[in-house]
Image 1: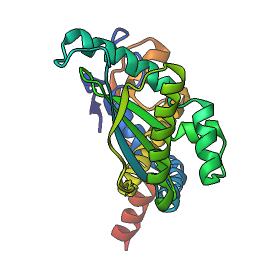
Image 2: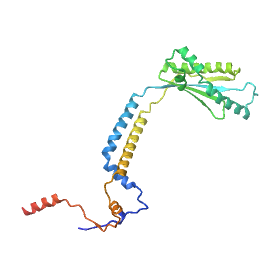
Image 3: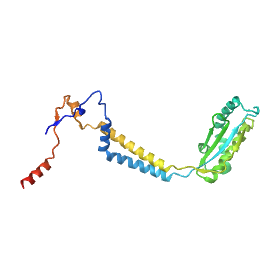
Image 4: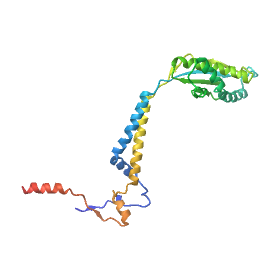
Length: 246
């Protein structure tokens, strides 16, 4: 039986620039084995990382910078000066001298640069507050280390600036455990694995030269298709004929 040619398959040079959405869906269905093979190692790696992720603890110290020459009431100028001092002190708190003293006091198996990398300094915009945070895998040492860093920082300011214009408002009473986010890591690994698999499948389809649609044939031959001949399963027809003869 002759198939009527579906005009939707006609080739349009202006619109056919590669894989469209429908082509991409069918490409994913055709290449699902490749997608799974790529996704499985990524998901396994993500699950392994999530399960073996070490427990980390964090402790925080809140500090305030004050201007000893300022009046009793704090104005906009004082806040501006304190903000600039905060930016300067942020660099100073991670100095090698301070880190080396803390390492020596607690006999830490770390370098000044390694210790400084786990110290985070943040400031509250529009205020003179600073927060020092320290992340470590040792629950008993996390709070003492960040408290000592704050003390050494005050001593360093007095030594360099010759002023004692920074005070500790709130010491770290103890360390709190950071969430491991294992579920988030596994979900991210699944999404990443599927995305990589789909990307590889799309690239394979783009470089694949096999003709799949009538529009591909029209593009190669440069002529319009008049009709399509349906695929006939000859083995099934032969088997039905033998049954009828019997």
